Image (cartoon, rainbow, N blue to C red; front, side, top):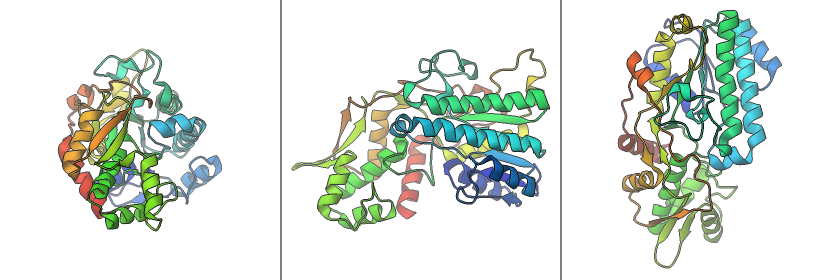
Length: 360
């Protein structure tokens, strides 16, 4: 990419897309074409065709997606597969029709089998069944990888795919109905600390910024307490407790989103599909894992967030709720060998994220 290349970031207001935008701005890129989801519905093939025909971007970062945690994935299964397939199909196909020089498709390491060998190499894809709770989303992302590979093989395009591990950072989703585990835990523990300190000003400010199922900071204390209780922040006579879904034993890997954005720009600049696959008779698994190669249990993650937030109450694990995959650690040797490595460790990242949350 040149500094004045026309760049389209699909999903530029989301967690990953906004980080990619900031990273490119910091590196001196100036020519962006950006549309919010309200301005351009990427599920609409006619709207996407009109957009590409009018603006002719040279480079595309496909970071737009419908995303969520275990509850959202398991509840809105049809939306997760339909919306993501439509977004991918429209953007990739119009990139081809309009001569996009290079496209980077963002997926997720949930594409890998539930019982994948650890740490998970790229060639574990499609070797065994997926985790049930997020199967529709994972299938959509696998289709996206194969879509990019297929267009490359048939049409000579240069579309690459990056599979990040669990991401966190500025502009994360803190909606307790839909959030991933780290932002959900951080917000719940933040509210629990305010509750144990009887800091109702802080609780009301938080709920005014992001109501929980329609309950804002303007609601009565009784209604607020009832809603917090529904979402696992519970106060009894002696202490405040925070519910954590599952056993706390699953191991998860987390990557600071601005490290992910740096990896995306790195791959866009360095990874060439034809060069990487020229020696292969069958082209498979051309996607690239992006992560830290280090994992932590959900229980230890909660303790780490506790130490950052300063919460002194207790945790309880709801074993009636699903654990999901017990271990999901990525093998990042491929991208490390190419010359990229993460910079922000988890304790430092959680501290940065909590400061952003407090100041947002």
